[in-house]
Image (cartoon, rainbow, N blue to C red):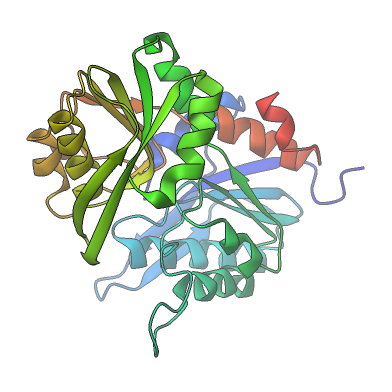
Length: 315
């Protein structure tokens, strides 16, 4: 029995309106009307222009660049929905920012991913719907339900037609081995690993390649591409090792700093990126392939509303 509202209402922050509109269209509805503005001093104001009392409200907002502004927008949207007596509030966060700050690597550091979880809960979110968290243990930071959707199936379905005996799935670092192994198993392809050492943040040095890539078509798999140092250095190492064609894919195209310039000069012939982050036209390259996640999020939203299993959408 549905006891959290009789109607779905979908609203979007400013971070990824194109994806939000596609999700709403998949659900045969449109985005709700709301006023979301910034005052001249930078303060954010949100007001719903329609009643949401007792409704099942889904707020779509990626906490991507500008991270703090988009996060604050989401928190204020949640607070406004709670004070407007929404029946249930689900924060749909296609890209969860601050996910890399999930532990204390050194003394006197924050665990900002936990802080963000606390902020979302305190603001009034009843549950969170996200995709491909950088670290799965972040799920344990929440005292409310969190559903972590998988973007991998969408990516490997895109590359599946390219798979043959000369196709190899490559993990760009040790941390992505589990992800790459799942993709390789699903594609029934061979696997290789790039072993690297990172002297400091955003600086990567390739050490060696574990596996045979000579004369092979390689697909590098990662959850996000930020400054693109890891993926580009890995692609160069593969090319030096005799790889034939080099592809890459990721769930989140953060693309900060010199990322676009590095990718433009890299040997990567095709880069598939999910649309969890809205990439502006000035950052687009001819090699980019943007793949929509609207169907996955729409199915997940429908299943949350109907209290059905999220895992069923992958059957």
